[in-house]
Length: 124
Image (cartoon, rainbow, N blue to C red; front, side, top):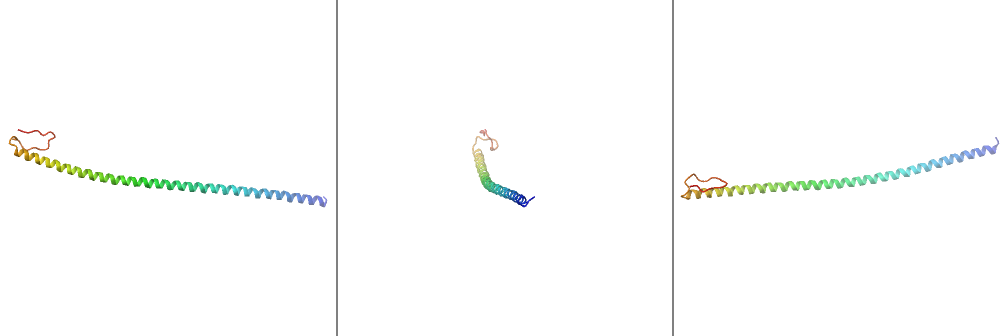
């Protein structure tokens, strides 16, 4: 082979190597761009998930607060019911005492004084 042929072969090899190097460079650059985009998407998704998690935590805290409020309200109602029950028992006891006193005073009542009857009848 003559010198000019060798030079052309070397130039061709250099060009092929340069083309391969450029393809590899741009391929890596393209992959890096794709990876950056994917990482940005993953970060955005993570931020969105974190936001949704905070929303759910806030909803859970609100539900817990409502439950505690309901417990307090239920306790207040239980106490109120117990107080009303106590007041009703006092009124019932007072009414029974008053009926027994009336039976003692009434000359028409000849049997033992009344007790709690749902339908008290006048005893003679």
